[in-house]
Amino acid sequence: MSSTELATIAFEDAERATVATIRGEVDLSNADRLLEELMARIGATPVLVVDLSGCSYLDSAGLRVIARVDVRCRDVGSGLRLVVDRGGSIDRVLAMTHMDEVLTVDRLLSDALGAALEGVGREAPDGSDGGAVEP
Image 1: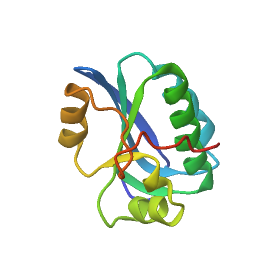
Image 2: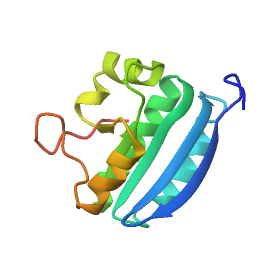
Image 3: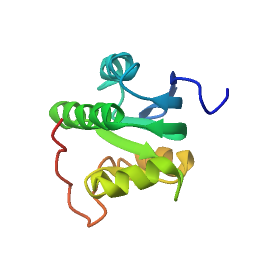
Image 4: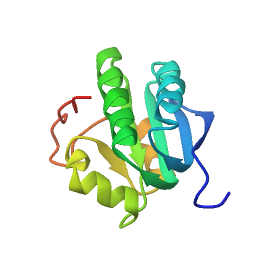
C-alpha cells in the first residue's frame, strides 16, 4: 500500500482484546465508515486496541472518530488503547490536540496487548482514569 492510499481497516481477535489495524489516510472521505466499523466492535472484548502505526495521515475527522470511540468505550466499560509510532505524524497530531493526555497510547502493539492481558485498559499518563474526550 502506498502512503497516499485511503484508509483500510482490518480486525483481529486477541486474548482480552480486539485489534483494529488502520492503514493509509483517515480523512473526511472515509471517517464515517471507519467509525461505523469500530463502533460495531466495541464491547466484543474487554479492550479495543486501535493500531495506527500504519496510518500515514489523520485529519480532524479522524480525531473525531477516535474521540467518539473513546466515549463509547467508556460508556460500555471497555478499555481503549491506541498504538502510535513515537515521533510520527499521528503522534504529533495527538500531542498538538492534547488527546495524548486523555487517551492511553502505546508505542508497540505488543505493549497494548500485554496491558490488555493484565487487565489494564485506560489509565491516563498521570495515573488517573483520564477524561472522556468530547466528540
